[in-house]
Amino acid sequence: MMAVWLQSLIREKKAEDVLYYRNNILTEFPRANLFIVTKDNALVTPAENILLGITRKKLIGLANRLY
Image (cartoon, rainbow, N blue to C red):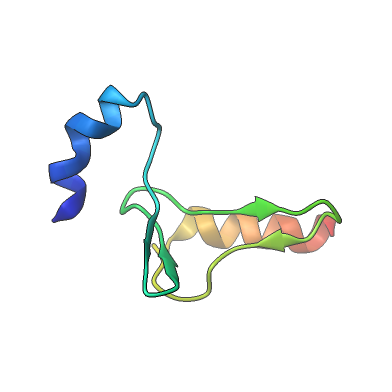
């Protein structure tokens, strides 16, 4: 798994996490979800190639109530 190989580089660069971009597809690091809030307060998050889970589901539910 690429994430394991990148651990030393991640620490060296003082990064919190990594996003993968290949063939015009953005994928998340295996231990985190990606959420972006745009200038016009729109919540953007990938629909495919993502880490599904309770936290993601809860955040999307909260955002739907706020926006």
